[in-house]
View (cartoon, rainbow, N blue to C red):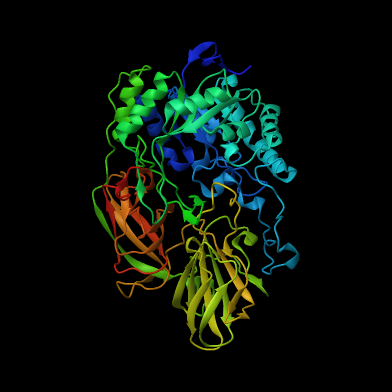
Length: 615
């Protein structure tokens, strides 16, 4: 019997009435050394529960592995939540959305990589299984989910409430009613959890729309709703769908996320607090989305694709009560006051902001050109290891064909004729391609602009064509999940197909070694390159990396991948968690894709995510 049960109008935990007052806190978006701090601040705001998704794609990067360490040490996170006296709502998906790369679905579900070590593309492997139906009862999908759960659930079962742990409920899928109506699929997931030892309460969540609620729910499984406003109407729709049982908003949206090139979103504090009060006054339980958003470190941000492709930024601040750097914001104090009207709040002072590193300037005085790493006739630093190139005798390969979840792919061939003309990329690019001819920049193509053609001047017959393609994040919502990355079809110059491609995967799973980077000869740089600088820290503290004069790329400090920067905005700084720094010398490495007008970077004490825009 589950520890958490339902009554006609509420919850009971071990027989005692419980109102769930929860906040979303994704362990995989927070540095593990900061988990105790964030959980403590959740309890001090008045939360009795935290909620987290589980990203399948990171926990199972290949079909036969399971990763549960570092940023992905979910058992440790659950132990820390229990030590703080917090319950946990677990949302394992398999689909999670979350503005996360691919919505959490592994890229290998739809990819067919080259056999390792062959160095040559084998035509019989050129197509993935195009027929697999994601998020459905297709056995090719459900078998993969079951194999994942076989690995994931055993280490989590000791943390279920039935075993004395903090996990009181587990979600089945995620807003499925907005995607499909395959009840057999949802039933399969329910059975998969149950037969693998999950005794806890199961629930579904869907937007407060009658059709969504009908398509995404299961008999005997608690239905919850997601919404950010119109509280009375949303709760009424939930009650109409489910005449008895607890009313619960599983995602109470109190902010929003941002896309590159778009506005910085926010939500008025007083408006959000008033709606939270309406929810609690109605007797409902709630999960605030987000309590603490955190950061899309590394290559983990997702993307949306409604009318066009739109990648999500690195910050997942979400205008949440706890800011990206873990400081209480206006909503923290306002929500604490609202919660105190309806439930006990700890009789302790609200936390203050964490210390910040003094402003610091970093000179990046060593560099190494990127294109040299893939075999140009220039000495490439041996510290930078590039995976073996794959030769495609005909058309270029997609990144998915190389088994590449994220990062970059460098494509190289020659153009047989010179002169001015059009390069045509059939099917476009996934997601942003920089084109070079004999090493000179020739232009950029972007998926979000639906570009397929570029006017270029080929300087000579036999000129080397390089195309550096960046994966900007996999779509996390809707029917375009699983869209391929890299070059997506044949390439032609003035109608003549270009064949014989050397394809170099650049996953950048680790920061390049810098020992053989050369001293920078100029203060500016106009080609893709790695840049390195050092700086001293007395006492590590949170800080924010500011890059005025830089264009677009990736940043690492002491090997920790902070994520993507881009002067397109709205985000202008990258969050640097204090645990990333160390007393004494520290290293900053930037991969700048275009060029910089300065050899300097700055650590500042205030984030810049853009000017807030309230809907």
